[in-house]
Image (cartoon, rainbow, N blue to C red; front, side, top):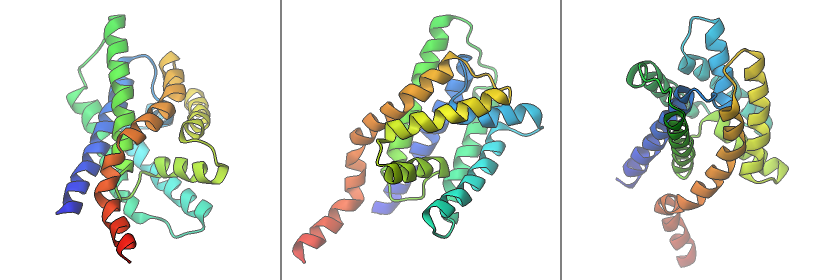
Length: 211
């Protein structure tokens, strides 16, 4: 029952982060750095943003395995598919006809999307289930470089934004803000989401103490 509850939290975190990404894209202020590559490729091929993202994540899954010298974490296909499909549901379904022309509406939706993305990522990372390869890549780089999660995120997403720009994606001022602020927001909300990790780590600690 405990792990069922955690799995519900896990899926909820993924869905909330997908909603956040979709809101950022729909704000019109510039797509997120990581999404810029998927958006750019979807502009050149007849595929959805979520579909491109799924393919890119599968490739990154193999890259992560190479960096860690381990087998590919094929269980990560679960969050990969959830993220890709829910993002498409929001972009091409629920939010498809929504347009924001007033500057205050654009910035409001953008800010909400940025916060939802950070909280969703932090919530699902606090569970014991597979990570999306991009987030796992950030954790690998965090360990290998001994740098903070926010710094690793800033450097990685800045590079992805450049690739997205070269692909013709709508990289704007909002993209820069995401690159600079998403990492620190994840760092902050990751601490805030600590009680979620306690749901599955505390019993192990108690057993260790008894032993």
